[in-house]
Amino acid sequence: MIKVVHLTSAHPRYDIRIFEKECRSLAQAKFNVTLVVADGLPNETLHGVDIASVGPAGSRWKRMTSTARHVAGKALSLKADIYHLHDPELLPHAKSLSRQGAAVIFDAHEDLPKQVRSKPYLPFWVKGAASVLSAKLEQHFSRHLTGVVGATPNITQKFSQFCTHSTTIHNYPTPEAFNNAPTPYENRPPFAIYVGGLTKLRGITEIVTAVGLSQHDCRLLLAGDFSSSDFEQQLRKLPGWEKVDYLGYLSREEIHAIFEKSRLGLVLLHPTVNYVEALPIKLFEYMAAGIPVLASNFPLWESIINTHKCGICVNPLNPVEIAQAIDYLLNHPNEAQRMGQNGYRAMREHFNWATEATSLVRFYKQVLANKDSVCAA
Image 1: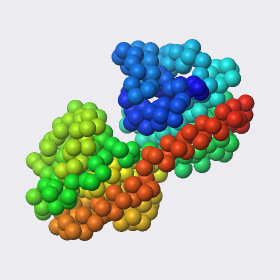
Image 2 (image 1 turned 180 degrees about the vertical axis):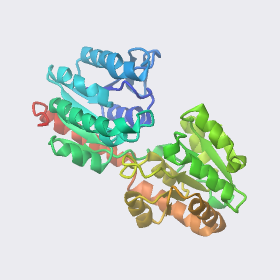
Image 3 (image 1 turned 135 degrees about the vertical axis):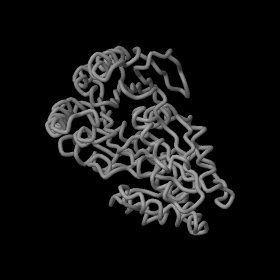
Protein backbone atom coordinates (compact mmCIF):
# COMPACT_ATOMS: atom_id res chain seq x y z
CA MET A 1 0.00 0.00 0.00
CA ILE A 2 1.34 3.42 -0.96
CA LYS A 3 2.08 5.52 2.12
CA VAL A 4 1.15 9.20 1.97
CA VAL A 5 1.81 11.90 4.57
CA HIS A 6 0.11 15.30 4.42
CA LEU A 7 1.82 18.07 6.39
CA THR A 8 0.42 21.33 7.75
CA SER A 9 1.85 23.72 10.32
CA ALA A 10 -0.95 26.28 10.02
CA HIS A 11 -4.28 24.60 9.21
CA PRO A 12 -6.66 22.90 11.66
CA ARG A 13 -6.75 19.11 11.62
CA TYR A 14 -10.23 18.95 10.11
CA ASP A 15 -9.50 21.50 7.39
CA ILE A 16 -12.01 21.07 4.58
CA ARG A 17 -9.56 20.90 1.68
CA ILE A 18 -6.80 18.97 3.45
CA PHE A 19 -8.64 16.48 5.65
CA GLU A 20 -12.25 16.30 4.50
CA LYS A 21 -11.46 16.23 0.79
CA GLU A 22 -7.90 15.21 -0.03
CA CYS A 23 -6.98 12.91 2.87
CA ARG A 24 -10.34 11.16 3.06
CA SER A 25 -10.49 10.69 -0.72
CA LEU A 26 -7.00 9.18 -0.76
CA ALA A 27 -7.89 6.84 2.10
CA GLN A 28 -10.99 5.73 0.16
CA ALA A 29 -8.70 5.10 -2.83
CA LYS A 30 -6.71 2.64 -0.65
CA PHE A 31 -3.72 4.84 0.14
CA ASN A 32 -2.21 4.63 3.63
CA VAL A 33 -2.76 8.24 4.75
CA THR A 34 -1.36 10.18 7.70
CA LEU A 35 -1.96 13.86 8.40
CA VAL A 36 0.64 15.66 10.53
CA VAL A 37 -0.73 18.79 12.23
CA ALA A 38 0.31 21.25 14.93
CA ASP A 39 -2.60 21.74 17.31
CA GLY A 40 -1.63 20.00 20.55
CA LEU A 41 -4.66 17.71 20.44
CA PRO A 42 -4.43 13.91 20.88
CA ASN A 43 -3.51 11.68 17.96
CA GLU A 44 -6.43 9.84 16.41
CA THR A 45 -7.62 7.83 13.44
CA LEU A 46 -10.70 9.17 11.70
CA HIS A 47 -12.33 8.06 8.43
CA GLY A 48 -9.29 5.92 7.66
CA VAL A 49 -6.82 8.79 8.17
CA ASP A 50 -4.19 8.70 10.93
CA ILE A 51 -3.79 12.18 12.49
CA ALA A 52 -0.59 12.97 14.39
CA SER A 53 0.06 16.24 16.21
CA VAL A 54 3.45 17.70 17.14
CA GLY A 55 2.00 20.20 19.64
CA PRO A 56 0.44 23.66 19.35
CA ALA A 57 1.76 26.00 16.67
CA GLY A 58 2.15 29.07 18.90
CA SER A 59 2.90 32.52 17.49
CA ARG A 60 3.05 33.32 13.77
CA TRP A 61 6.87 33.44 13.89
CA LYS A 62 7.11 30.16 15.82
CA ARG A 63 4.71 28.50 13.38
CA MET A 64 6.90 29.53 10.45
CA THR A 65 10.13 28.31 12.08
CA SER A 66 10.24 25.73 14.86
CA THR A 67 6.71 24.39 14.31
CA ALA A 68 7.35 23.85 10.61
CA ARG A 69 10.59 22.06 11.52
CA HIS A 70 8.80 19.78 14.02
CA VAL A 71 6.05 18.95 11.52
CA ALA A 72 8.63 18.07 8.87
CA GLY A 73 10.64 16.01 11.36
CA LYS A 74 7.58 14.00 12.35
CA ALA A 75 6.69 13.43 8.70
CA LEU A 76 10.23 12.32 7.91
CA SER A 77 10.07 9.69 10.67
CA LEU A 78 7.02 8.14 9.01
CA LYS A 79 9.01 7.20 5.88
CA ALA A 80 6.35 7.88 3.26
CA ASP A 81 6.27 7.32 -0.48
CA ILE A 82 4.66 10.76 -0.99
CA TYR A 83 4.87 13.89 1.14
CA HIS A 84 2.19 16.49 0.47
CA LEU A 85 2.96 19.95 1.90
CA HIS A 86 0.22 22.51 2.56
CA ASP A 87 2.03 25.60 3.85
CA PRO A 88 4.78 27.78 2.29
CA GLU A 89 6.89 27.60 5.48
CA LEU A 90 7.24 23.85 4.88
CA LEU A 91 8.93 24.37 1.49
CA PRO A 92 12.47 24.69 2.98
CA HIS A 93 12.05 21.11 4.25
CA ALA A 94 11.26 19.66 0.82
CA LYS A 95 14.93 18.81 0.27
CA SER A 96 15.27 16.68 3.41
CA LEU A 97 11.97 14.93 2.68
CA SER A 98 13.01 14.09 -0.87
CA ARG A 99 16.40 12.67 0.19
CA GLN A 100 14.85 9.36 1.24
CA GLY A 101 13.55 8.76 -2.25
CA ALA A 102 10.02 10.04 -1.72
CA ALA A 103 7.98 12.22 -4.04
CA VAL A 104 7.32 15.67 -2.57
CA ILE A 105 4.25 17.71 -3.60
CA PHE A 106 3.42 21.27 -2.65
CA ASP A 107 -0.27 22.20 -2.49
CA ALA A 108 -0.46 25.92 -3.30
CA HIS A 109 -3.77 27.01 -1.78
CA GLU A 110 -3.01 30.67 -2.49
CA ASP A 111 -0.75 32.74 -4.72
CA LEU A 112 1.74 33.59 -1.95
CA PRO A 113 3.35 36.73 -3.47
CA LYS A 114 -0.10 38.20 -4.14
CA GLN A 115 -1.37 37.11 -0.74
CA VAL A 116 1.51 38.91 0.98
CA ARG A 117 0.40 42.18 -0.61
CA SER A 118 -2.96 41.80 1.14
CA LYS A 119 -1.66 41.02 4.64
CA PRO A 120 -3.20 43.60 7.01
CA TYR A 121 -0.41 43.24 9.60
CA LEU A 122 2.32 44.29 7.15
CA PRO A 123 3.10 48.01 6.72
CA PHE A 124 2.32 49.17 3.17
CA TRP A 125 5.97 50.06 2.54
CA VAL A 126 7.01 46.47 3.36
CA LYS A 127 4.45 44.64 1.23
CA GLY A 128 6.12 45.18 -2.16
CA ALA A 129 9.55 43.97 -1.05
CA ALA A 130 8.04 41.09 0.93
CA SER A 131 6.05 40.00 -2.12
CA VAL A 132 9.12 39.98 -4.35
CA LEU A 133 11.16 38.11 -1.73
CA SER A 134 8.44 35.49 -1.19
CA ALA A 135 8.29 34.87 -4.97
CA LYS A 136 12.05 34.30 -5.12
CA LEU A 137 12.05 32.01 -2.08
CA GLU A 138 9.05 30.07 -3.37
CA GLN A 139 10.80 29.38 -6.66
CA HIS A 140 14.13 28.60 -4.97
CA PHE A 141 12.74 25.95 -2.61
CA SER A 142 10.57 24.46 -5.36
CA ARG A 143 13.74 22.97 -6.85
CA HIS A 144 13.31 20.03 -4.51
CA LEU A 145 9.67 19.30 -5.35
CA THR A 146 8.44 16.49 -7.54
CA GLY A 147 5.16 18.22 -8.32
CA VAL A 148 2.80 21.08 -7.49
CA VAL A 149 -0.96 21.12 -6.93
CA GLY A 150 -2.56 24.52 -7.51
CA ALA A 151 -5.97 25.44 -6.13
CA THR A 152 -6.70 27.58 -9.22
CA PRO A 153 -5.52 27.46 -12.86
CA ASN A 154 -3.60 30.72 -12.43
CA ILE A 155 -1.58 29.33 -9.52
CA THR A 156 -0.85 26.16 -11.48
CA GLN A 157 0.20 28.18 -14.52
CA LYS A 158 2.72 30.10 -12.43
CA PHE A 159 4.36 26.95 -11.03
CA SER A 160 4.25 25.10 -14.37
CA GLN A 161 6.89 27.53 -15.66
CA PHE A 162 9.48 25.77 -13.52
CA CYS A 163 7.77 22.55 -12.43
CA THR A 164 6.79 20.08 -15.16
CA HIS A 165 4.49 18.03 -12.97
CA SER A 166 1.79 20.56 -12.03
CA THR A 167 -1.96 20.19 -11.91
CA THR A 168 -5.03 22.06 -10.68
CA ILE A 169 -7.19 20.53 -7.97
CA HIS A 170 -10.12 22.89 -7.43
CA ASN A 171 -11.60 23.32 -3.99
CA TYR A 172 -15.09 22.32 -5.09
CA PRO A 173 -17.75 21.11 -2.62
CA THR A 174 -18.33 17.50 -1.73
CA PRO A 175 -21.81 16.69 -3.12
CA GLU A 176 -22.58 14.24 -0.31
CA ALA A 177 -22.33 17.09 2.22
CA PHE A 178 -25.42 18.75 0.78
CA ASN A 179 -29.06 17.75 0.64
CA ASN A 180 -29.88 16.00 -2.64
CA ALA A 181 -33.13 17.99 -2.71
CA PRO A 182 -32.59 21.50 -1.30
CA THR A 183 -35.42 23.04 0.71
CA PRO A 184 -37.97 24.56 -1.71
CA TYR A 185 -37.15 28.19 -2.23
CA GLU A 186 -40.66 29.42 -1.49
CA ASN A 187 -40.45 27.87 1.99
CA ARG A 188 -37.38 29.88 2.96
CA PRO A 189 -37.57 33.13 4.99
CA PRO A 190 -36.01 36.33 3.56
CA PHE A 191 -32.54 35.60 4.88
CA ALA A 192 -29.26 36.54 3.19
CA ILE A 193 -26.22 34.63 4.39
CA TYR A 194 -22.49 35.16 4.67
CA VAL A 195 -20.23 32.46 6.09
CA GLY A 196 -16.47 32.84 6.45
CA GLY A 197 -13.79 35.08 7.89
CA LEU A 198 -15.18 38.41 9.05
CA THR A 199 -12.60 40.88 7.77
CA LYS A 200 -12.64 44.23 6.02
CA LEU A 201 -11.18 42.79 2.80
CA ARG A 202 -13.95 40.21 2.64
CA GLY A 203 -16.46 43.01 2.27
CA ILE A 204 -18.25 42.67 5.60
CA THR A 205 -18.56 46.42 6.14
CA GLU A 206 -20.22 46.88 2.76
CA ILE A 207 -22.49 43.87 3.35
CA VAL A 208 -23.80 45.14 6.70
CA THR A 209 -24.21 48.65 5.26
CA ALA A 210 -26.09 47.26 2.25
CA VAL A 211 -28.50 45.26 4.42
CA GLY A 212 -29.28 48.47 6.27
CA LEU A 213 -30.01 50.20 2.95
CA SER A 214 -32.23 47.39 1.69
CA GLN A 215 -35.88 48.30 1.22
CA HIS A 216 -36.87 44.71 1.95
CA ASP A 217 -37.63 43.26 5.36
CA CYS A 218 -34.66 40.89 5.29
CA ARG A 219 -32.16 39.55 7.82
CA LEU A 220 -28.46 38.92 7.36
CA LEU A 221 -27.19 35.67 8.86
CA LEU A 222 -23.52 36.30 9.63
CA ALA A 223 -21.36 33.33 10.61
CA GLY A 224 -17.64 33.23 11.32
CA ASP A 225 -14.92 34.75 13.47
CA PHE A 226 -14.07 38.45 13.49
CA SER A 227 -10.53 39.45 12.55
CA SER A 228 -10.40 41.65 15.65
CA SER A 229 -12.64 42.94 18.44
CA ASP A 230 -12.13 46.48 17.13
CA PHE A 231 -13.53 45.52 13.74
CA GLU A 232 -16.49 43.82 15.40
CA GLN A 233 -17.28 46.97 17.36
CA GLN A 234 -17.07 49.08 14.18
CA LEU A 235 -19.67 46.85 12.53
CA ARG A 236 -21.99 46.85 15.53
CA LYS A 237 -22.18 50.65 15.29
CA LEU A 238 -23.48 50.56 11.71
CA PRO A 239 -27.24 51.11 11.21
CA GLY A 240 -27.44 47.87 9.25
CA TRP A 241 -26.40 45.84 12.31
CA GLU A 242 -30.01 45.98 13.53
CA LYS A 243 -30.85 43.56 10.71
CA VAL A 244 -27.95 41.17 11.48
CA ASP A 245 -28.19 37.84 13.29
CA TYR A 246 -24.60 37.10 14.32
CA LEU A 247 -24.20 33.35 14.75
CA GLY A 248 -20.49 33.10 15.60
CA TYR A 249 -18.39 30.16 14.49
CA LEU A 250 -20.47 27.23 13.25
CA SER A 251 -19.75 23.57 12.57
CA ARG A 252 -20.15 22.21 9.05
CA GLU A 253 -23.48 20.66 10.00
CA GLU A 254 -24.74 23.97 11.42
CA ILE A 255 -23.60 25.84 8.31
CA HIS A 256 -25.49 23.46 6.04
CA ALA A 257 -28.58 23.87 8.22
CA ILE A 258 -28.64 27.66 7.80
CA PHE A 259 -27.95 27.30 4.07
CA GLU A 260 -31.20 25.41 3.96
CA LYS A 261 -33.18 28.39 5.28
CA SER A 262 -31.52 31.20 3.31
CA ARG A 263 -32.62 32.87 0.08
CA LEU A 264 -29.26 34.15 -1.16
CA GLY A 265 -25.56 33.80 -0.41
CA LEU A 266 -23.06 36.66 -0.33
CA VAL A 267 -19.43 36.46 -1.43
CA LEU A 268 -18.31 40.07 -1.93
CA LEU A 269 -14.55 40.05 -1.52
CA HIS A 270 -12.65 43.24 -2.24
CA PRO A 271 -10.73 43.46 -5.56
CA THR A 272 -7.27 42.70 -4.14
CA VAL A 273 -4.61 41.02 -6.27
CA ASN A 274 -5.08 37.83 -4.30
CA TYR A 275 -8.88 37.66 -4.51
CA VAL A 276 -9.67 38.58 -8.13
CA GLU A 277 -8.25 35.28 -9.43
CA ALA A 278 -9.37 33.12 -6.50
CA LEU A 279 -12.19 30.59 -6.55
CA PRO A 280 -13.73 30.80 -3.06
CA ILE A 281 -15.33 27.61 -1.85
CA LYS A 282 -18.32 29.59 -0.53
CA LEU A 283 -19.30 30.51 -4.09
CA PHE A 284 -19.77 26.84 -4.91
CA GLU A 285 -21.29 25.93 -1.55
CA TYR A 286 -24.04 28.52 -2.05
CA MET A 287 -24.67 26.94 -5.45
CA ALA A 288 -24.76 23.51 -3.83
CA ALA A 289 -27.36 24.77 -1.36
CA GLY A 290 -29.61 25.84 -4.21
CA ILE A 291 -29.51 29.57 -3.46
CA PRO A 292 -28.60 32.40 -5.87
CA VAL A 293 -25.19 33.97 -5.40
CA LEU A 294 -24.52 37.68 -4.98
CA ALA A 295 -20.84 38.02 -5.83
CA SER A 296 -18.05 40.44 -6.66
CA ASN A 297 -17.88 41.43 -10.32
CA PHE A 298 -14.46 39.88 -10.96
CA PRO A 299 -14.09 38.58 -14.55
CA LEU A 300 -13.43 35.00 -13.45
CA TRP A 301 -16.47 34.92 -11.17
CA GLU A 302 -18.67 36.66 -13.73
CA SER A 303 -17.77 34.02 -16.32
CA ILE A 304 -19.02 31.27 -13.99
CA ILE A 305 -22.13 33.03 -12.71
CA ASN A 306 -23.22 34.41 -16.08
CA THR A 307 -22.56 31.15 -17.92
CA HIS A 308 -24.66 29.14 -15.49
CA LYS A 309 -27.16 31.94 -14.74
CA CYS A 310 -26.90 31.31 -11.01
CA GLY A 311 -26.68 34.79 -9.50
CA ILE A 312 -25.78 38.46 -9.81
CA CYS A 313 -22.37 40.15 -9.85
CA VAL A 314 -21.95 43.66 -8.41
CA ASN A 315 -19.27 46.13 -7.41
CA PRO A 316 -18.28 44.84 -3.94
CA LEU A 317 -17.25 48.33 -2.84
CA ASN A 318 -20.69 49.86 -3.53
CA PRO A 319 -23.24 49.18 -0.73
CA VAL A 320 -26.04 50.83 -2.73
CA GLU A 321 -25.51 48.47 -5.66
CA ILE A 322 -25.34 45.51 -3.26
CA ALA A 323 -28.59 46.59 -1.57
CA GLN A 324 -30.33 46.93 -4.93
CA ALA A 325 -29.25 43.41 -5.89
CA ILE A 326 -30.49 42.02 -2.57
CA ASP A 327 -33.85 43.69 -3.10
CA TYR A 328 -34.07 42.44 -6.68
CA LEU A 329 -33.53 38.82 -5.66
CA LEU A 330 -36.00 39.04 -2.76
CA ASN A 331 -38.60 40.86 -4.87
CA HIS A 332 -38.33 38.35 -7.74
CA PRO A 333 -38.52 34.97 -5.97
CA ASN A 334 -39.32 32.96 -9.10
CA GLU A 335 -36.24 34.23 -10.92
CA ALA A 336 -34.12 33.84 -7.78
CA GLN A 337 -35.35 30.27 -7.43
CA ARG A 338 -34.34 29.51 -11.03
CA MET A 339 -30.89 30.93 -10.35
CA GLY A 340 -30.59 28.69 -7.29
CA GLN A 341 -31.67 25.65 -9.28
CA ASN A 342 -29.20 26.50 -12.04
CA GLY A 343 -26.37 26.79 -9.51
CA TYR A 344 -27.33 23.51 -7.87
CA ARG A 345 -27.33 21.76 -11.26
CA ALA A 346 -23.98 23.31 -12.22
CA MET A 347 -22.41 22.14 -8.97
CA ARG A 348 -23.66 18.58 -9.46
CA GLU A 349 -22.50 18.44 -13.08
CA HIS A 350 -19.30 20.53 -13.09
CA PHE A 351 -18.12 21.99 -9.79
CA ASN A 352 -17.93 19.04 -7.40
CA TRP A 353 -15.17 17.30 -5.51
CA ALA A 354 -15.71 13.85 -7.04
CA THR A 355 -13.98 14.85 -10.29
CA GLU A 356 -11.16 16.55 -8.38
CA ALA A 357 -10.56 13.47 -6.22
CA THR A 358 -10.10 11.37 -9.36
CA SER A 359 -7.63 13.94 -10.71
CA LEU A 360 -5.67 13.90 -7.44
CA VAL A 361 -5.27 10.11 -7.48
CA ARG A 362 -4.19 10.27 -11.13
CA PHE A 363 -1.62 12.97 -10.28
CA TYR A 364 -0.22 10.88 -7.42
CA LYS A 365 0.40 8.00 -9.79
CA GLN A 366 2.11 10.40 -12.19
CA VAL A 367 4.52 11.83 -9.61
CA LEU A 368 5.32 8.37 -8.25
CA ALA A 369 6.34 7.30 -11.73
CA ASN A 370 8.57 10.39 -11.99
CA LYS A 371 9.72 10.90 -8.40
CA ASP A 372 13.37 11.16 -9.44
CA SER A 373 12.45 14.19 -11.55
CA VAL A 374 12.39 17.47 -9.64
CA CYS A 375 11.25 20.96 -10.55
CA ALA A 376 13.84 22.99 -12.46
CA ALA A 377 13.41 26.23 -10.53
